[in-house]
Length: 234
Image (tube, rainbow, N blue to C red; front, side, top):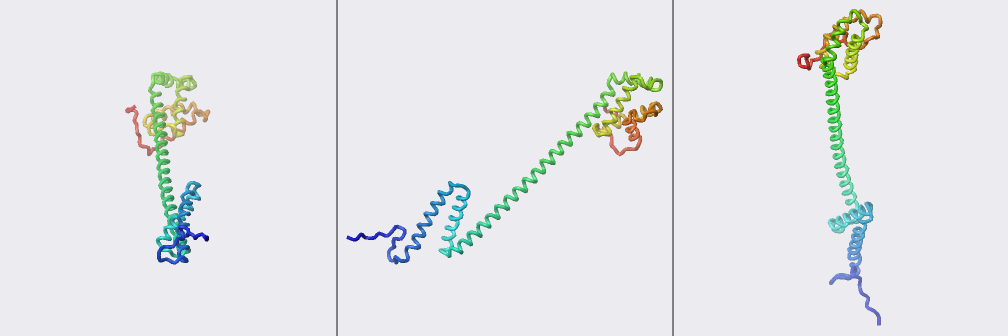
């Protein structure tokens, strides 16, 4: 007895529908479902599979929205939408990158400012250290002996140590290691008077106390520096 052929679920005709017009539309719906399931499974396979799944789902949605338009038209619309979405994504990433660059520049500027502040504080600390040393008990005693022997015995131990202090001070100021705005109001007249007092002795050796001589010449000229500290404030 011949077996009755059963139509597959995807091509089973509906009441009042011709069998020859059922297969394409019904099977395409079944195939779409199968592809969607495959796409869902492909999400676990990696970025490329997920991208393909996303494109196919987008194509299926466009196909429904266009009412069954031609495949080429749906693909063109899908590609256009993909390009638009990609352009929006790239623009967003570029804007985010620009904000990150601005933030990094602000951080670098803040770090440079903090570094400069630290350098200025160190220079001021060095200048105050010179003033403190000059006013110490040891220096006051040394100063008394040096002033007495500077003309009678310019190479005495006390005179050499006293002039070495001004050489060290001058080296720090000329190399911007000590704040000149702090040092000059306090030491200007002392350096000029001391170096002028021993000039006759140093003429035979111009390399002796070269930095102290240079600082004396510099401080003999008018200055545009605004003194930030006077000797009376120390």
